[in-house]
Image (tube, rainbow, N blue to C red; front, side):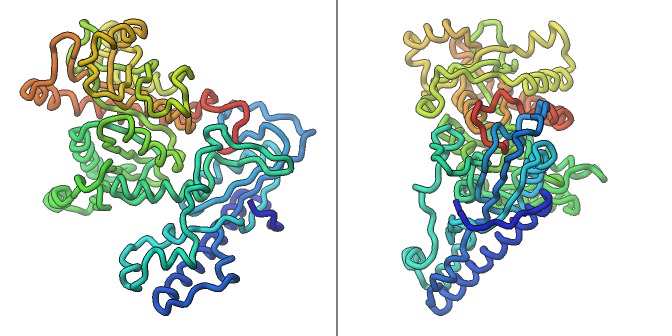
Length: 490
């Protein structure tokens, strides 16, 4: 981090204004130097390159005599006096988040905020978003790397989130889980995997493992756009195809048909509202590797929550095809996070999420009391990295029995563990699509009939749960996700 003299600011608004000014200036100078090099092959001078820096945000907390705040908030907390720093990218896009984090530090702790340029260079691919510019200039990436900052994987990591960072005497403490280079890395990965600009991602996220949920989500989203004065502004599909209220039905149909979602590994769909208060649905596909991959990158956007709404195998003979499973615990056999969050680390259910999902199920289905219990069962979900685990049933049955598991899937435990690890509230509501232990397997005819009946209701429950969580957001960000030595920002 930079040790240059920083400009103190008097308010959170002024701090973010200054961050925006510094970032815009550094980015503009980098783009100008790139354009000059692409046109003339003139490299930037050392003095010019010194301007290609992320802005630095510093919070100084020295007022140890002030009484500690008694709030129950899970962010905006300074656990000890000292200096806290982070680099910042795209401050204009993150303005609302930054203000939310900074304002309580000033008001409740009397902290001082400083903003300056950092020592961390902005890699050129993070401002050169059009690949055709390389071809236009007839230069290679290797040519550019000789003269411009490039992404350095050694400088991008999750040591802060994973509690692996080491505090050195006299050095500042981290202000946030992710610095600018880590955020920029994930923003570009999101574009690559989801097929949409990262700026379209909303604060409320649904993750699914089946494309039929996408079809239903797009239909539902288009219906929302028909409500004059409603909260939603547009539907954005992979390839950044946009449907707006102005489009006639036949025009919207043509846009949906033109969407080449299959070109992207984990296509994302966004029902956008002001301030990011809409809903994003990501079809993550099958397996824990995809689940970890996409949540690694979504986490840098600091969404309010992510919920898994997908299919599972029911493990109890009393369950029926189409019943729901509200995961209250996870038997993690995904293995992909074992080194970061060992399986013996408990992944707690978050009461706020659990209540919202159950209330949403009751509201959408109309079931209450015993009728709701018969439709929605709470219990342990096994997340397995082997889709054909049934072929090892003689080995698996003992662990299933010991865990009292009621369902099995391939993503939910990973998504929950990632939420726990990266401090994003999480939850799981699955729908029983087969019962592998009881002779009810997925056969084409029965499966299609089930999907037609169940997908619409299941998605509606997930969307209703997000509505409830919006209304209850003050209680959403749980202190269960914070460690004893946590950065102030959520």
